Length: 172
Image (cartoon, rainbow, N blue to C red; front, side):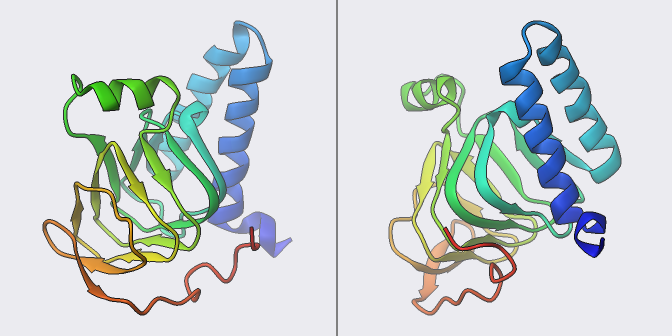
């Protein structure tokens, strides 16, 4: 019963249910999905369009003021997002952004990725496996090497990462 009481389980359930409505029920499903997305925003403080979130194991333990938006986040691994994280685009006229926005993959994220509190990610960008992004950082370029990144803009400060933050999530 404790599992169903946790924010992580509830948020994942509502996102998956909203995605199911959007993609599997003609006409009415899209409207219900948008309504459900507003419900998620009102209850949890996460602004999103669930049809564009495709993360296998997502954990948002502190869901206040998180903006996932409708740009498209894709991951086949484990991703932890802390409070205040914002996913946005650099410019809406960038051809790469427009191409990846159409397929809901503006942000491609690897396995064992932790995004700290109040991080701003400006896409399109890719983040490889085993990355920790420190609190209040700005990520405006793809991260291609595992490690710990902090700062404005984010720079690599360490090679050492662990699975401490994602150990509660199933392995790939």
